Image (tube, rainbow, N blue to C red):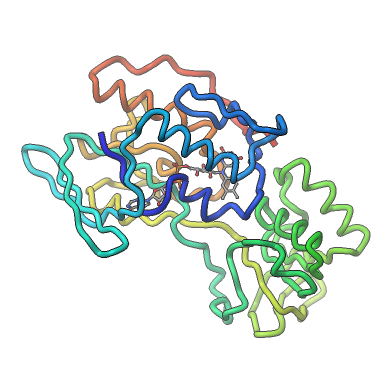
Length: 313
Ligand SMILES: Cc1cc2nc3c(=O)[nH]c(=O)nc-3n(C[C@H](O)[C@H](O)[C@H](O)COP(=O)(O)OP(=O)(O)OC[C@H]3O[C@@H](n4cnc5c(N)ncnc54)[C@H](O)[C@@H]3O)c2cc1C
């Protein structure tokens, strides 16, 4: 078995979680391969703690993980698959396999608003280190978890924060330790919220919105556009996997995780395509590995674990 990844181990957590972000899931729901995830403060794990844990899992189990190798081509003959990767130095490598698991996630590229100015250099999609927003006027676009957490952290780091959200309130599933605090700051006028508002254009020093009171201009120096991500289906196309439904998800048999292409499986959040609302995440994707292993070995599907419909929030 070989595992290749275009980035580091835990790439999405590494690149999309701002420093010191805590998971909403409890450590025991994030742990994999029967290896406990111990957190020094007996709390939810942070990004840094989970990345360290993943490194330990790889070294403990001596997993053959090859990082910074992007899959660029795939071919099939009667011996099986030949998968080509390219590393950061441009070197290509070919590996053969009888079975391939596509665990490519669903957050390859940022969602776009399609308004003028969204490519300006002061528009960002990642919070990064909130320190950079000290004494800055920041407009945060979005009303779900990432936007709410960014608003609170930027405010605490000394920024003047305005939120623009098309809904009439922050999303109800924002982390329970963030939502009430941010709502209080909005009520007290320390953070400004423009609800029921759509961004019409972004300029170097202002965001223009259409809201309940008509068009408005919000002065700013930085814009954080936190409206989610989309899956890049390129690898599914490469392997000939068909997709379906409003989320453009790879078609697969849920008892085996095999796609429409024999020998090609999907696992993790990749199974859900581009999620409009997150229903597939680490917590409820653990079962995929057991189903795939059973299918490859020709065993009956493993017994179903009672599904947790909602993550802890
Ligand atoms: C801010 C934030 C907070 C979250 N909190 C939680 C939480 O509390 N609990 C929870 O359960 N989930 C949470 N999630 C969701 C969680 O991060 C994802 O469910 C999880 O990362 C999905 O794991 P995955 O392995 O399926 O996909 P990913 O982690 O997205 O991994 C996919 C991998 O595929 C690689 N890849 C893609 N294309 C190629 C290619 N062509 N060649 C080689 N490699 C490729 C990528 O480099 C990437 O490393 C959160 C997400 C975010 C952004």
